[in-house]
Image 1 (cartoon, rainbow, N blue to C red):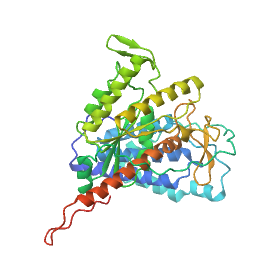
Image 2: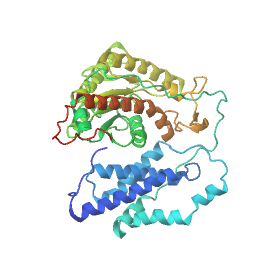
Image 3: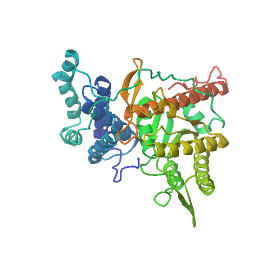
Image 4: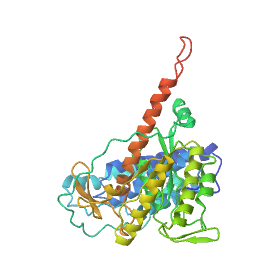
Length: 402
C-alpha cells in the first residue's frame, strides 16, 4: 500500500492522538478473536479491518483525518475478498447472549471514545458501510474429503542468509516480510498479517489488476524498485499470474500466451524481478495459484504454474504450489472445503470462482508461513553459532528471540 499523502509530523499532540487511535483500533482488532464470524460476520469484518488499520498506522505517518478513509479501504478490500463464512447454524443461547451483551458493546464503544470526541467520531464514521453478502446456502461437500495435513517445511536457503536479516535478528528487530503480487497478493498479505507470530512485520507491496503482461499500465520492476528503496525487507513472497493469461507486447513484438516468444519475454521479466529483490537482500518465495472454476481458465493457469515452477527451479527460488490445498478429495474445484480439527466444511472461494475468502487465503498462505518461520529459525541458530564469545567484562549479547 502506498503511503498516505499529506502526512503530518509525528510529534506533539498529533502523535499522542495517533497513539490513542492505534490503541483503540488495536483493541477493536483484539475483539476479533472474541467474535464468532458465524454469528456476527459484520463485527468480525469491522474488527479485522480495525486491526489492519492499527498495524498500518503504527508503521506510517498517517494524519488523523485519513484514518477513517484508511479503515473503510481495508474493510472494503476484505468485503471484496468475500471473507464471510458459510451460513451460520442456529445460535445457541450462550452465543446469543455473547452477541447481545451490553457490557461488551459498551466496552467496545468506550475504546473508540478514548481517542477523544474528534478522533472517535472519525473512526466511528468509518464503520458505516454496506453489509457483506453471505452465501444463501452451503453446497454439499463430499463426505470423503480428506483432511489437509500440514507437511513439514522443506529446507530452503539456496542462497545464503542475507546480512540484513542477520543484523535484524542480532538487533532484536522484527523480521520484515514483503508481499508482492496482484489481488491474490492482497489476500495473501491480509492472511499473513494475521498469521505471522510476534517478531514479524508483514508489508503489502501488492497491487490489484497488475501482472507481468501489463507493463503498459504498470512496470512491475520499476514499481518494486521504488517500493523497496526506503524499506529493506528480509523475505519476499511473490504471487502473480491471475491477470497474465494473455499475450504480451515486448518492444515492437507481440507474443501469444505461452508461445516461445511469450515465455522468453515473460521469463526475462520475472528473472529481473526476482534478482532485484535478491540484490536488496531478501529471501524470495514464489507462491502458486489455486484451482479455478472455469475449465479453460484453469487449464491456462495450470500451464502457467508449470512454467513458473520450472523458472523458479532454474533460479533456485522455492516455488510453493497451492493447488492441492484448493481442491476436494476428488481433485475438483469446490467452494467449500473441510477446515480445522473438526474438518467442518467452510467457504473458501469468492463468488467469482477465482479469488478466495479470507479463510481461503489463510489456507493458501499456511505453507509459506511455515517455510518462512523455518528459514528464520535456522537464521537465528546461525546467528547464535556465529556470535563471538562474550568476555567476562563485556555486556551480555542482545537476545535473538522475538
